[in-house]
Image 1: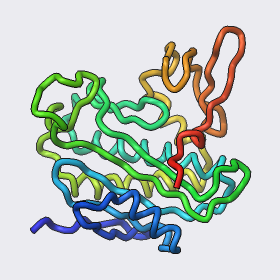
Image 2 (image 1 turned 60 degrees about the vertical axis):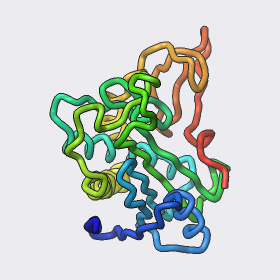
Image 3 (image 1 turned 45 degrees about the horizontal axis):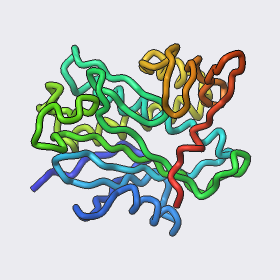
Image 4 (image 1 turned 120 degrees about the vertical axis):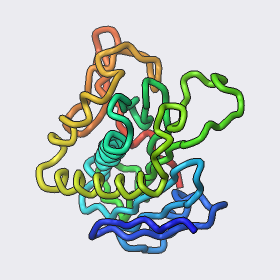
Length: 234
């Protein structure tokens, strides 16, 4: 029997059946009024899927910055558990990369879409594959999984425990001192920063503004792209 993960104070865990998506479960329970700080997770061994329910007290344009917090928490968790030579990076808006290939990412949803509205809830999920999705090695060279990157010793529940602890720590930093510290940690891990990109739109990825919006330079114009555009509709 798999040992239940231990969560830090202020967070609690709730396992979901193996056929249930923890993100969908978290959204449905958030709508019903579940406590903020509840982490829904699956014990399937091939992929870590988990989702954290938050109850923001700020407008969505500020609350959505917690997505960066969850990314930093995941990167730090992988950095702590993986071999030291394994690099972990971000691909805006929602992908995690290990050794230069996409290895899962984050999902997020809220009950409002207006940046000025304060959401009743915000759900942030993570999805990290441990085993290949296909039996054909190299079939998707831009996609990877932890076992293919020398991280076979990491267990899903150990990564979940670590993510919950690192994410809670960075949520504390974020609530105490704003986005600047989170941004300073996130920025060096984004490997497309300062480069020409095609997704989500073509242009030069200049950086993030104080609201965490992508600054995308196209010819002589610079436009902003918000994470809110990539929230899942519920």
